[in-house]
Length: 163
Image 1 (cartoon, rainbow, N blue to C red):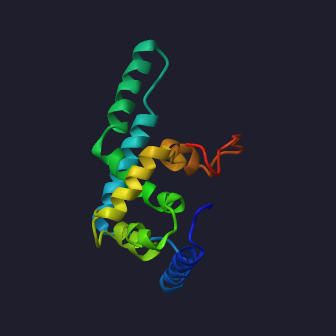
Image 2 (cartoon, rainbow, N blue to C red; image 1 turned 90 degrees about the horizontal axis):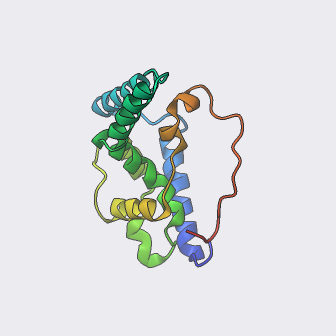
C-alpha cells in the first residue's frame, strides 16, 4: 500500500508466515464455548432463513426478525471478530503502528477462546471496519456460502484509495 514502511511490512509478513508455519495448516480449533455460541448463531440464522415470505405479513415478520438478529449481540460479535483480519490490510505499516497489529497467532487465540479481543489493536480494527464499512459475505449470505458460494460476483471495488 502507498505510504507503508517496507521494513515494517516485511517484519509483519515474516511474523505472520512464521506463526502460520508454527500452527501448521488446518482449521482453527475453537473452544467448546465459542463453538457452541457459533452453532447457536448459525441455528438462529437457519431458523430465520426458513421463515415463510409469501404474504406481506410474513415478509414483515421475517424482516423484523432479520433486523433484530442483525442488531443482536451475536451479530455484533461475529462482525467484530470478522473485521480483525481485514483491518490489518488497511492499517499503515509503520514502526509506530506495530502495537496496532494483530498477527495470526493472536487471532487464533481469540478463536480458541484463550483471550478476549480487547485493547488498542482490536479497537483500531473495529474503527477501521466502521470507517471502511467492511462487508462480510459469509455473514450476510451464510446459506449461499454453505452451498459452496456464489457462481459469480461482479463489482468495481476501490482497491486503493477511496472510502
